[in-house]
Length: 313
Image 1 (spheres, rainbow, N blue to C red):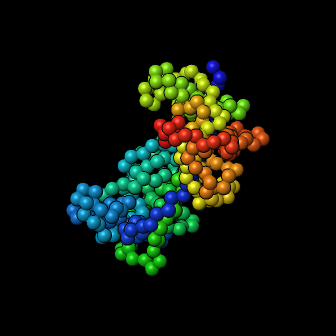
Image 2 (image 1 turned 30 degrees about the horizontal axis):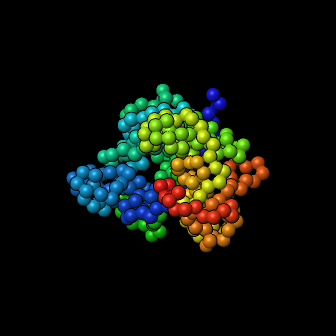
Image 3 (image 1 turned 90 degrees about the horizontal axis):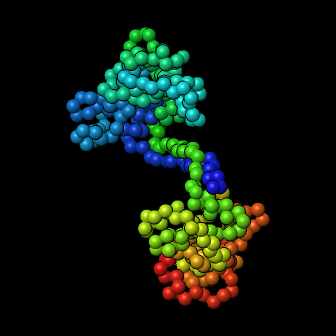
């Protein structure tokens, strides 16, 4: 059996969000070297603060300063930090109940090894050298053997509050398309399109999924389809995507390749965008060294009759 393909894949995007009054005060406070919580109706102080009581759903607005010192309530050692984590050297993830708070804050603890960490140990905030109004303004926690720090009595009022943040979301993992799609991708490198036929309903799926989505049976019989096909439906793209060197407007379509029972996606070229239509007969256009068609263009054949592709819409 051919080796199943796999490759590293990174999904990354910036997430921009506005802040309500409580989160704004909390992050602005971190920028100014102050830790703020919020008081609930029953007198508890929540750090990090939330805008609604998790028990009663009551709106919360009373800000309370807590101390930058606290106690570790639980922890886990991280021997191999990943990119973007608070410290580049091994550290402990800790939940710290700051003095004056009733809940714990998750962050990193800079410690020489797991033997130096224990539940109940006293720690204090190590502030980042440059602070911008983010949770990373707390660089980490560090062991503390001194006295409990006292809050300054800050009210949570700031002249230049943080009103929004941009959080970078990133997921690194190794993706494998599986046996069926590995065969499909390998066939594309030879400018062939291969699907798989269901042993029960006899439908041919392209790209293959390894199982029939209707019958639930495994598929293994390979069937070459195309290369020509029919546009079943389409959309006109008017907004240019980042890192995609295609002038707008252009057409992206569902194309039912001859012999396939499932339409695949493809860009339509070689024809004005406003002349693309359902039933248009198309064929793939390859570029040198490409592993998949660059786009599909009209074949010049008469349009397909609607009844031949209506079940593939």
